[in-house]
Amino acid sequence: MTRLTRTARQADLVHLPAGHLLVHFVEDPEGHGEQIYFSLSDGADPTRWTRANGGAPVLGSRIGTTGARDPHIVRGDGEFVITATDLRVWGAGPHRWDEWTRTGSRSLLVWRSPDLVTWSGPALVEVAPPTAGMTWAPEARWVAADGEYRVSWSSALYADDDPQHRGLGHSRILEARTRDFRTFSPAEVVLDIGRPVMDARVYEIGGRMVRFAKEEPGPESLGVFQEVATADGWTRVASGIGTDRHEHVEGAMLVEDPLRDRWLLWLDQYDRMPQGFVAYACDDALSGRWTPLEDGEFTVPPNTKHGAVLPLDEQEWQRVQAAYR
Image (cartoon, rainbow, N blue to C red; front, side):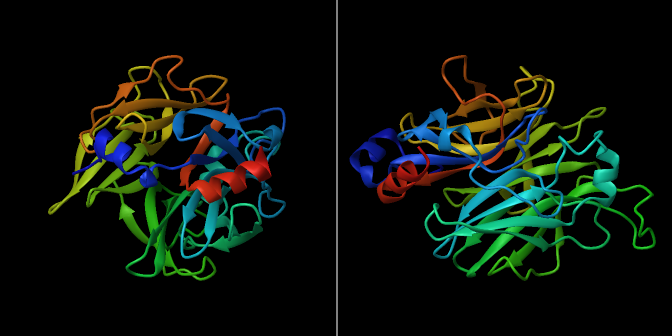
């Protein structure tokens, strides 16, 4: 089974989250939105959101580039960990995307908390090899059986004899293992399609693995695509997700909707301002068949960008509400 039935959920409400926490950044060309923001769901409903903390950022960075984009949060071994891209786009002069992909930060920003309220950090932790041009859009997964985290991100890789990264290179998804977010195993490539790819997210659903990623725009680009793990590797079940309504989408994120017995796929549209998340829905998250939610079915504050949703139990939900409402 890839999902619980609605009847099963109603009969066993202990599995329903009390609420959800969305960790994200804000697209703000005039200010400094490249920090860590929290938004809270309307109770257990993951289609209605309010920006928390009076709309102010909860965490920020004064180290590295002084920008924090693409945050991700993971519930691990007795703690919560937020990772983010060390990149400041706005307020850093003209956009220099080519430079940032060739000689950008090879480190991740890391914050840690035992309770979602008291945070330490940020720490700047180098994870990508010298052949990498940048470290973008991290994801962390706690693997309890191994007692470690799997951390992945996107890096453009260049030849060993090209230390200035002036030659050809394309972004791939790299992964490393860590137990403490201080030391990491050597990074390994886990997704390479021969063209620039980023924003990978991996989920386990009913014992099956599903992966989303995005190929950068270009001729015959896959756009946002979905793959399902099989005995022979990964099988692509959808591509060009979201292009029925938006020219540019990225940052795919899978969220379970426990009230409506379905899955939501959030996509970060950057066609136009205000930017931010739109949502698609599906009963079977492994199928790749996604239907857009109409206006009014999904509400999130404008310019809410690339992040992660964490379901919370009652105690966690009350604590977060008290701290950030």
